[in-house]
Length: 534
Image 1 (cartoon, rainbow, N blue to C red):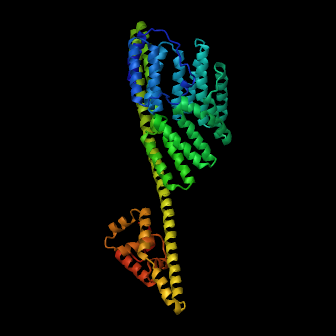
Image 2 (image 1 turned 45 degrees about the vertical axis):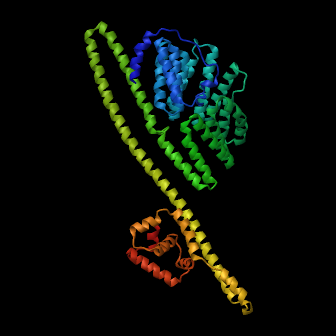
Image 3 (image 1 turned 60 degrees about the vertical axis):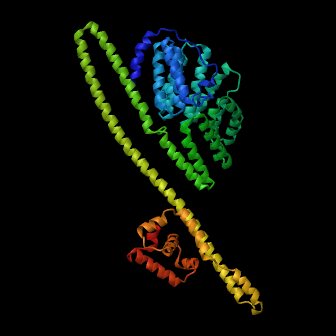
């Protein structure tokens, strides 16, 4: 926040009159659309805007400098760098206050409200939205510009309340937005239709939502392609609710594609992968489900926790710092005025101010330390819970695959038994056809090794570390022992093991006894449970 102390003396030098220039299109001010420039190199755009700001300040064009700062802050918002966006909007607000620029203040208040809305700080967001509305109604603002500003603020307030689940308020603000828009344009406003479609979706009116949303696709493709990240995500949600999973998957993937293509709405990507994971679980594509779930988890961590406590702290700490700076500024101004009247009182008030500041810092530091400690405990608890849930899901999938494997193995056993029965039956037929029978018997062979190789390959694919753990713990075990352990892990009975391996029950029991001896297991230890835990 040091930049604010540099900006204040600079601002007092500038005396240029406030310009009333505004963008000609209303939609350029819609916060929940990302930048619609064809450029995707945001670093280059940020460099251009920063250069424009510095050059404008040199020639004392404060209005153009504010425009450049706001544009740069929009980029920081759409790319998820909320801390820099916050600093930028406050820098622009300082300049706007210095030249009494109500037009830009309307936009800045709305943008600050949006940042607080992203972090689910509803009361703070609404405070800034209301400041934006109040400023827009200033008599000094031209009526057309006023209507545009009110339209944009009502629109974002509708979106904010819809995301908060306040659908009644969302409808009211949307109606206000539509009334104001009709005063300045006769064209159809696609963003209003889209927002109304989202409200229909939340109300469970899926067909109405689709009917309203689909005709807007070509408009957004042409003029605001980055907005399609949100648009396609909602269509995916609707089709998922309608259990039209193919269409839901199609729109989720399109949303991801546009997010990557325009480097926009990065905070939507983890949610999109989570939604895809849920969809794939519903259609029994468990591999894809877990893959997308993992992507969601990784991206949530990489994006420094959009809407997380850590990012919420950014705004809270910055707010506290900004408020403290304003308090200090007021105290210093009061002290300078009192200095002209009574020199002795100046020293007294300075000492009081210093004491208050020290006590405030001590209290604030204590509160922050307590809060950070509490937050760390909460994060650790949440992390352990997530780890436990992930472990339980993995165990469920493993158990399911092992059940499939067991079923497949038992089918092989049944097949072999059937072939043996056929073979024995053929051996009992009329000896007059013995030559033909022998030919058939020669062809009927049960290849136990082939059955085992097929079974073992599938077993390893499901239980990847089982044999490694077995070898590390009991290096003296043979391949035959490994084979027996695999069947015991799948809870095969002695009879099923006998049929599958083509050996007698007595041999199975002997093998189990030898296996317990090699593992040095006590009589009280259940062999099946012990191997099942490996």
